[in-house]
Structure formats: structure tokens, C-alpha cells
Image (cartoon, rainbow, N blue to C red):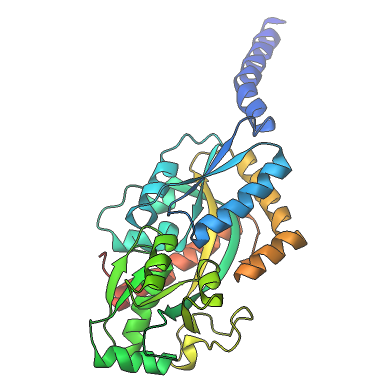
Length: 325
């Protein structure tokens, strides 16, 4: 009579032992350094955001969170590396609109499946972009820039952090609404692009405000407009592009995502920790000085947001006719 009970007990014990390593690994996480891959070169907003988050997570979880820059193909190289990484909670991606929403509609062949291979963890920050020019460009406002571009079609070039970046699509949207033509020069991140813009190798750009702000404040670049619907306090006197091109609006955002299959317990723990960090006054102040707004929230809320942004940018790509350059 006791045999069935013994057999059942043995099965339960075997199941518990099978689950124990995974449960223990999650409870002990992180027990070694964690990578946050930035799919662009150092110095851009993706990089700045990741380093602030990594620093805070290192302090909070008593384990090193290390930022690694893997630039190329508009963010696809770094994103693909994370998508193919072991889903063990030790590799994450600082995702952008390009890696999570835009690139799939620009590139004829993607090295990863945006919707299936990467899962949402935390919405970190959102930022407006800024339209800026080299000081040698003879245009002091948006209307003068549009007039200049119409008078000299194709003679000026615009730099972006890469194909599929919000800088790329924001400028394509600007070109469509203003009826102008400017040559696209894609880079491998904001850092090298902004250096060339300040040196006059390219004449204009629309890029994330956090990475551009120091060069604007030092006078090395001139801000003409912001892509948000309202002015931003970090750039007093700089109007929204929508004040000249009604309905124009575009925004960048930066999110933590993980390889599909990463244990939900680790995703939830990291999400809660990032949410707590973003609410810290000193962290919020650091982001505010860069022109970035902390967001936070649950993985599900981030997933819903990415889905909505994917629909939005798919339409922008189609309407603008944007191509990979």
C-alpha cells in the first residue's frame, strides 16, 4: 500500500532537485559581472544612459555591471549579440528605437527577430532630439535653414548616429515635411558624428539632446529646434520644429531588454531595481541635466510601449521612403 506513496514522493523529490539549480541561480543572481551592451560607439546618449544605470546597479546589487560598446549596422550588431547570448541574466541590451522598432523596416535582412529574440525589462529614459547646425552654416533659425536647403538641394549633408536611429528618421521626417533634400551620412554612434559636425565635415544633424547638449552649450554647435511638441528648459529660446512644420514630433527612448528565455524572476528583479534607481533624486537630476526624463514601469508596460512605437515608426519609414545608406 505504501508503494504508490513512495513512488510519488520519489517523483516529487526528483522534480524538486531538477528545479533547484535554476531556483538557486535566480536567488543568487547576480553572482558574477553583468554585461550591458550598448550597440553604438562611446559618447552618445545610449552610452551615457547605460553608464549611469550600470553605475547605480553596481552599487545596489554589489556586483559589477559592465558597459560594452558593440557598434555597427545601426545598432543591429550589438542587438544581435545580445539576442543570441545565453538567457541567464548576465547579458542585457540598452535598446533604442532603432534596435527595437525601426531597423526591421529599413534593413532587408535582420540578424535577429526584434519581437521574438529580445524581451522587455525596463523603460529607462525618453529624450527629445535637437536640430542643430555647424556655426558656419548661414542659417540662424528653422525657416532660414529650410530656405537654404531649398536653394542648395543636396549640397549640404546631415550626420546621424547610424541607419535606423531616431536622428535618421527624425531628419527624414523633417525632409518630407519641409520639402527639402539633404545627403545622409550615417556614423557608428553619436560621439564620432558630433565630432565631425563640430568640425564641419557634415553641416547639420538631428540627434539626442543629452549627447549634443555640451557642444551646444559650448558654442561649437547651434541649436535651431527641438523635436518635442513643447520647448525644453535645457534649451531656452529654442523653438519646437512644429512651430514651423505643424504636426512634427519625434522622440528618442532608451530601454533595457534581455535575450528571450531569461528567467522571469531575474527580469522582474532587475526591473524593480531600475525603477527604484530612476526615482532617486540624484539620478533624476543627472538625467534632467542631460535633457532626459526617467520613466520606469513594468516589463509589460514597456512591451506595450514598444509595440505602439513599432507601428508609429513603420509608418514614418513608409511615408518618408527612408533607405539604408
